[in-house]
Length: 417
Image (cartoon, rainbow, N blue to C red):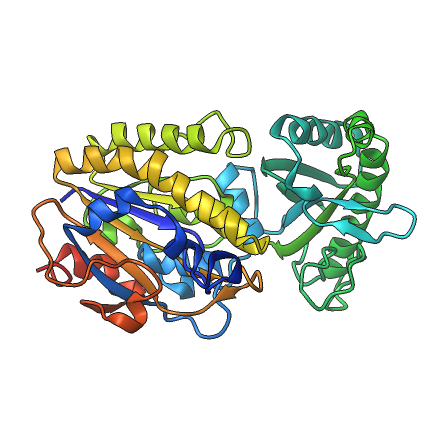
């Protein structure tokens, strides 16, 4: 059975006054989704995570990787795996944001450079950081990954570096918005050396970035400079996963994901990566989704299972912009779903549409609630009401399943008969 699983990050939301009391999904014009609903069953997936839900654990559960395998793996390590960066246990990885600070006071003006940093600009900064910064008796690799996000790997061959250190990124809501110096969380030399190296890199990076021609021109254009790197989620050990996707489900799988966390999880499970478009979503969102759909459609002929992760709706919710989130959902429907629907129908493939979690456009935070899921098959007819939105939770659904059991029960026919 060919299966296409589409996870739209943070798809579900709370009602918004800007949308007449509707959620972005409810307010969006989604003609392709309506076509899918005519031959779909709709249920809810319960995530076993208690408390705050994060994308890494939620996605891992959805595609069959138990949370115990991933819950304590920092994002930085998943990014190292995603990027194929050389890493040995005892090296130190850190998730990084290009950010805008006041270098005199270290006040953080914008943790994401206003989301305006281009890939070309970031790649120039990456190159010049790697060539222009030298650490005392240590080395490093910095890699820009996507948008404002990068990963840093610090190495000291004379000592293993500990991840028992504090962040330099004031990313938590309660944090004072200033660039912080890392501190060791224990008195051992591994922690002391790790925090010292991170602080040395941070200082030298600010000095290089603040005067860099890329940022001088950005200031001339009235754009925020990318003049600092904020680092968090240190990791010093690679995870070991005993059972991959093929061992769990008996088939090979592929994936298409733009974000490194999701790519790292999929690679840990042994899923094979599919290409991404050359165009960035910030350049032409419609072309980005169309080309993603073209790549997925071509590979659905050859791959029995494809997992696709789409992240732009979540970004809009984190920015507290329900109108933008509605637009993103409509663009996904018109330029991605429309094209993969035609191929799935021809091949008789199952199409799954769900989310890893809810993201509130009101607060900008994740919500740990059951996520609706749509399962489409061309030969399937449902007698249930044709609705796929947050209303599914209250207005009825055809099944309820734990996230870790979802794909197994789907494959055995327990969810669709």
